[in-house]
Amino acid sequence: MIRSPLMTVMTDAVMKAARSLKRDFGEVENLQVSRKGPGNFVSAADHRAEEILRGALEKARPGYGLVLEETGVVEGTDATHRWHVDPLDGTTNFLHGIPHFCISVGLEREGQMVAGVIYDPIKDEMFVAERGKGAYLNNRRLRVAARRDMADSVVYCGLPHLGRPAHPRFLHEMAAVMAVSGGLRRMGSAALDMAYVAAGRADLYWERDLQTWDIAAGLVIVREAGGFVTDCEGGLNPMSTLSVCCGNEVLHRELLGLLKKPLAR
Ligand code: 2AM
Ligand code: CA
Ligand code: CA
Ligand code: CA
Image 1 (cartoon, helix red, strand yellow):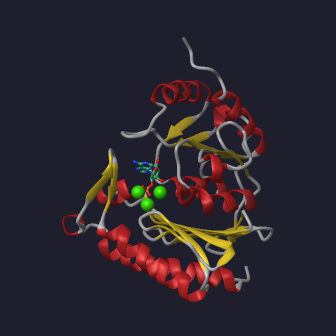
Image 2 (image 1 turned 120 degrees about the horizontal axis):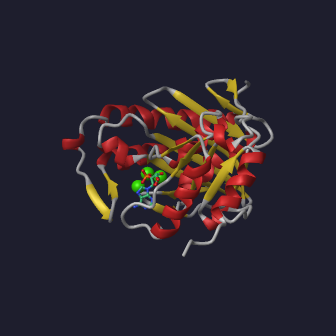
């Protein structure tokens, strides 16, 4: 894989922030943890990583706008480009010492997602993709899993935890998926869930009530790995509807069918 100047900018920024996260991992008593809302934590580790990413991206691409989870929207002078940055996806895992979290950076150009990088600093796994150029994990080309039978599949999901709506619907969907799939997983990092679909480690993934920084990079990576990505209603613009359903063409269609089932009475 030949790394483009854009990919170099993105992976360099992410590696720099990852060093900060690795230093902070396991130091929860020194991380000034606070709650933004019910079930929604933030710490000094999130803020430090975000500052590093913002600095590196602004230096390399002055004028691009930024949508940062902890800082919010930073308008740029270049109206056509915008970064979507999650400095630490899987904060709850991170703060519990669970080694499953990542940094996610996506680039939007004229309303389209064109590049994504997701990095897991603990496993040293760098998932990258640029539109039209394929998806890679540490220089190895990625392809979504080819399984066609739901009974063989491992399905990832995000639970609507405290503070998120739609619990009754989710319980119904989970029961429907459990009844037909080979297994259900809840890992706690939306971005890594998508990266794992691209890598064929997950056959399917669905989640609602997300944010653009959770899914921006994953969208490009899954699509470039040959996967189908829609929202949970089958719509083609998850960046505006903020839910995700993805997997290979066959299983994706089947999962959408399960999700659209009305609430049982
Ligand atoms: P975070 O760790 O960056 O906050 C897991 O289902 C996903 O939900 C993670 O990507 C996590 O991202 C996100 N998440 C965690 N708490 C949340 C909350 N209260 N509201 C919305 N998303 C949340
Ligand atoms: Ca958060
Ligand atoms: Ca997130
Ligand atoms: Ca985050």
